[in-house]
Length: 73
Image (tube, rainbow, N blue to C red; front, side):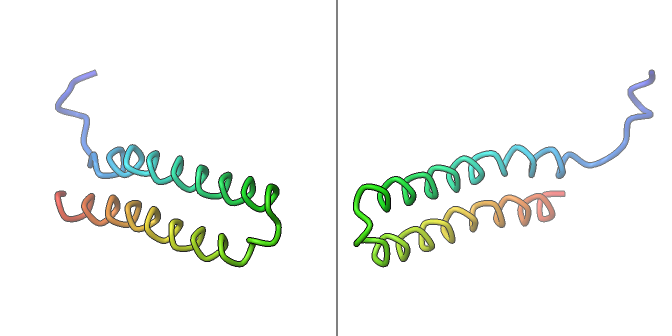
């Protein structure tokens, strides 16, 4: 196969690689929330706030990854 015949954008590959980090981060955040709630159920309200705050920050990284894929095209 000729290399000149390969066309496309690496943005999708870059975003796929950039989504690995936030995916792992979200998993760690929710796992920590479940563990803290299981250990101390009365702190659920306080830890839920921190869970959603951490989730939003980590998901912002995923959104930046897709935005930079379009910017540096």
